[in-house]
Length: 383
Image (cartoon, rainbow, N blue to C red; front, side, top):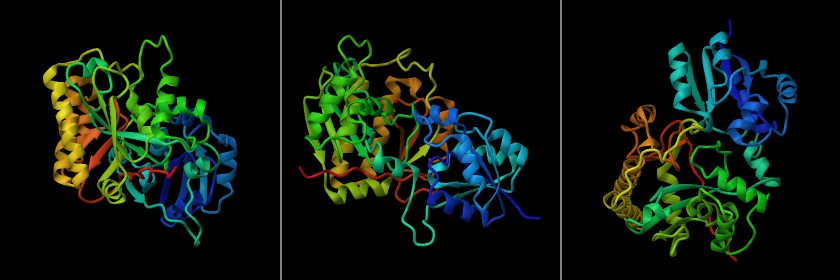
């Protein structure tokens, strides 16, 4: 009797990469495929599917490697829970960017082995992903991660002490989930101005246009400038704030050696989208001492990046996150701390992307950590 193998995903815009994934997964036994519903994908990705669930069912069912396909009945990252319990497969197979500790824990609770596959093209075909196909003819706008100094771009923080925020602009190699600290709300605002890609213009100018567009006159909540800057300005950039929404100055690093070094030592883990009702401003401890700690740690991170000093980079990275969470304790909770604890013997440092409460956990490590996502930093274009 063949083993039962389960995979789950969106599988929107079916392509050769999906087929190669099915082929490799099916090499372990009979393959069962659960697909995310149209409603689930829209909630997680912030967009409607290109191919409806009925079409995806039809196409996947026609692939010879697939024994059975169905729409997952749940919602969210674990929309397949009921199907997995009912099927009780021997193996649950995921790609590297499809791994999450929540999946691993759920599999462990059911006694199901979780196997992580690398994305390898089959039959000498070029690499394919839904994100790559979407960005080639649709939206190729970058994302951003914040490395240090998060929150200093708000005047109610920088008024206590000036300091730098450090951002890293990312190529959209995957489609990051909404409400996960990847500046998706600012990126969605950018789509209204530039639906497909950033114009060929000075990055600082584009960042200012985007910041002003998102924060229209009369807005009660001003989105920090670091989101617009991280999306529009390539490489690693630091921007200085002193009781104003827009930074007083910029510095950037575009050295190929340094950017490659960061890519080698940074990775990410998906947690879960930040809850809608979470209010990070309910309890805050914003004072001179805490803001100074935030500012000094960002300085340490910047100097470490310039010298490619991994040990000092990790120290500053962790100190910056500690300063953030001291000021805004709702960024973390016991559930998040439990996730962080899983990587303390593998990573040198960690922080949550953006405002926390969930989202993506960013790790600093000497060597790549199995099951984590790598990043591609956006390089500077020559004007």
